[in-house]
Image (cartoon, rainbow, N blue to C red):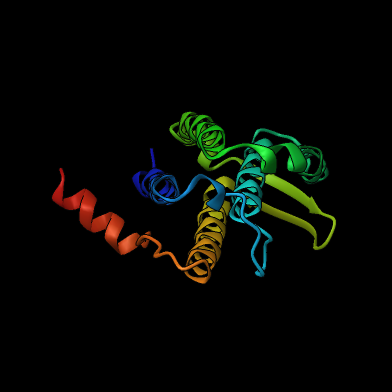
Length: 171
């Protein structure tokens, strides 16, 4: 097993969990509150991250990019409508699915041919795409931080360096 790949994905899970903990500390309506930002609410940001992560694991398991994009479009409204606890459970279940997949070495090296409607055909593997998934989550956790500050709340640190520090010092 590639320890870095699993550790990097664990960082993604940890950082999402930090956001969930912070949002749980705030008034209940904060999660769905509309703001003037890149996304209209934090629920729409987390829905986007969840559906993107879901789409990628589907692609890793053999589905097409078109399938993943259609799945996201079909589930967007209902995912955004979930409350904070419901979306947290969905993220947790998806993380377990990823971990089961990523702990099998052959899956990390699995060759994937992706036909992206916006970018053409690309041949790659899971190991090469995993940083994209984690970086995508990091980018959107930054959106949440900006939205929280706009609402008058502090966010929470979710950087990789802190994750490493906490994991090294807690072993």
